[in-house]
Image (cartoon, rainbow, N blue to C red):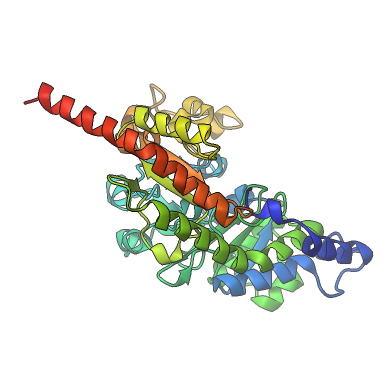
Length: 416
């Protein structure tokens, strides 16, 4: 019932066949190169228009997009990047790969970066804040931008899970210095694997291209924005034409998909928002939310586990969360290792895990994660499906509410 992967069909097939029929698999040269429509360049142009940025660059994955963005900003050894502790693996490992140190921050009840953490964690070595717009809900960008104003700290918007979301009427990925997107299979639009970087800064655009194309800046990009920067060694994260064709077809479907998901989400909210004591994830800008996943917070981990069990017994797809974990709980953080001993940005921090990388350092995020329940609404959900979710919640909620009241009364009695 997921997102873009469930909608792959004739539109994707038609564009892939166009690329195959003219034999063009590589965007820059080869058989059929230069014949319209070139899939990757068309994807970039349409995506930039969709987001409202001057430039877009397609790459091989969302992880590659993060590395390209970090490299474009010149982030490397000795630098620090503030990263929400509750975010995908790549948000941590991409920073380590660049030789910089990820500095972990608490999340707030939006499940995004708590803006107050920036002032607490910023040091003279802080070069960027990685803002992850988690599962369709943009972070509180007004507060985040205010926190970095005048500091020289760049804001990277990680939009991997939220393509199509907006904040105060502007598309995410166009508000910070640079934005990154993922087209991995479980994202709102997909090419199986793929990613994209957005920016309106010509200098950063040139550097993203060089980072993704072994330092080169080809004639295609020169026409869009003349080269003015230093040549340096890059990696190879170029997207191929077949992936570009699938992503392009999916992008063209995004506006309609967004409208449907938001309508389904509103139907669910209309059906459950009057339940006594229900607490929803905070959405900084409700008008910009994508609507494909609704989060509830319960009084305790035990209450959350019981709700998940009772809903599952009624055939409702519900989870604690969907694929994300706190970084302190993952092996790559617990070891602090990089690909080579001398490449780790945590060298010299002993004992390890050091303060700032341990479970006890993030009590607010840990409490939120333990008490939450996710209700996904996929692209293939019907109104009847949504009504079943709402009815199921209404059926089990009274028992949970009475248990909560009893627990509170018992607590009051033991703590007069």
